[in-house]
Length: 254
Image (cartoon, rainbow, N blue to C red; front, top):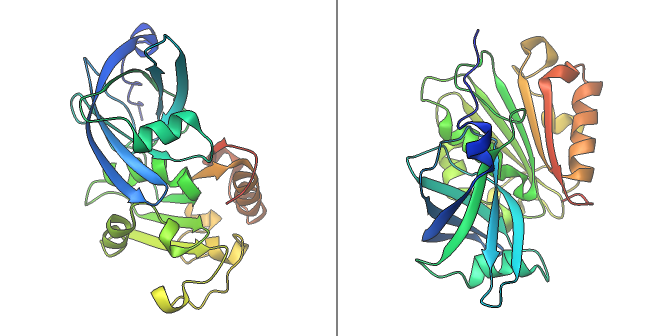
């Protein structure tokens, strides 16, 4: 089966484009989604990311990479930013960037950690913390009659779940299974989940219809330690390493 091309030519993806903030949505106490209007946006695939550059009045510039959190929609681009303690850029984007303010955006970037609607077979998504962002773009791009999806999402506690209301609704849809793993405390009184708190375990990824024999494409995203642990669990269970795609950031787990 022929693959869809990565949107935009190489020179187009390397070009900086003016972007303007249209909307900011608060997702959790530390995460916000920015909806940007980007001039002549070439489009993107779920799982890709962009570079965002801010320039201060004195000429100082700062550039950071952020995963795209929604499918392409004309010149509208969405990124979800997790505020980093003492992080100058993430704090500014979450708290101070005003509607109508300008920035520069480059991309889309990445061609391996992407999901294409024409891909055959089931899809297993494994997220740690804000690693859910590119996986959410995949979930949002899945058509109603698309292949089965399963998301296993590991966070410290229920209040840290990004996109909670939308994920709960998606989990009730035909062909989509959403499972939360809380590492610091169980869902308890909030969710009635009897799983004791703790890091991701093999049992969290073991479910009927999602084993190696079903040949799902596995996408794992999150902090480096989390991604390494999850990929090891999948490989040990017998999943084909060629079907385990990873994207990581930072030095520690969730």
